[in-house]
Image (cartoon, rainbow, N blue to C red; front, side):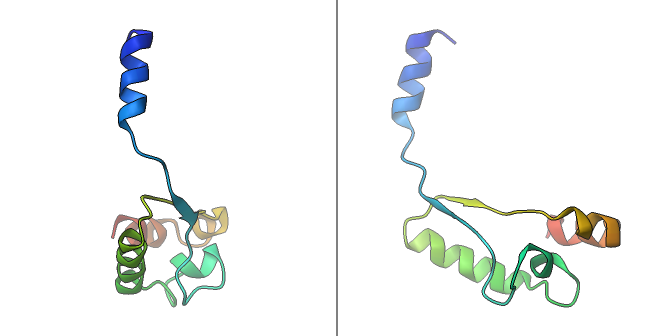
Amino acid sequence: WSPDRAHRWHRAQGWLVGVNFIPANAINQLEMFQPGTFDPRRIDSELRMAKLMGLNTVRVFLHDLLWVQDRVGFQRRLAR
């Protein structure tokens, strides 16, 4: 891209407004994705509320212990 095209593209983007996300039922990033506390319906509901409040960006921290403890299950839960 030319510098002009890149600047036009950038100006067309809105402000990023977001949060570090952990659902209300999880105390940390481990509980968010552990089998006993993973709650995709709650996550979807809370992300819908965030969108209604004008947020357009979320960051989720993924702990490496989840991968070490249950690689396949962790990947399945992420894919939901």
